[in-house]
Length: 185
Image (tube, rainbow, N blue to C red; front, side):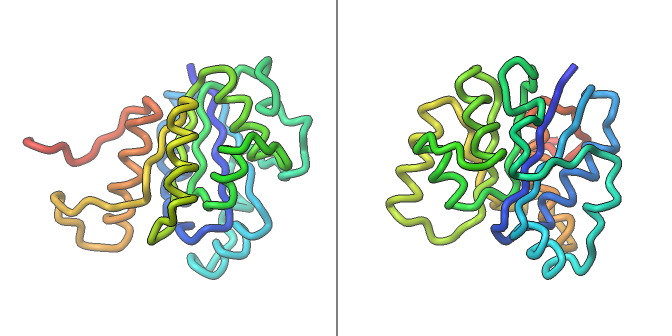
């Protein structure tokens, strides 16, 4: 079974984090442990974009970005998947440079060094050359860059349905079964 860390940074895109956490909680049979870490900026952006603080009432263990005693701060914690959603370009840059200055960048460093699954749902546009090179570096280190780019062939009718096309792709990448639109069916 899986041990999953979800990290939320202050980039725009709280809808993706909210939908991902909801879908993960609906599929508890596919993971053993789920941990959440959020930056202070992520909490502020969540309130602005979603108009609530529902992250406070989620039935998951929440860690502060300063808590280096979190089990996923070490390879011995055996967390096998980390999803950063949304992943700010600052966070991506720190990961690409090996700077472990908070729990999110430390946990990502651990995931990469242990050759486990790191999924960065980057949310920025346009990309600068620095962003592109940082994405390349993380990819070469074994991470997966999954831009928060919705698909439209399923003809989503709401913002939530469009955002779910990204979240469902992330769940696929994480190895969590999800019922979703499949091309050609």
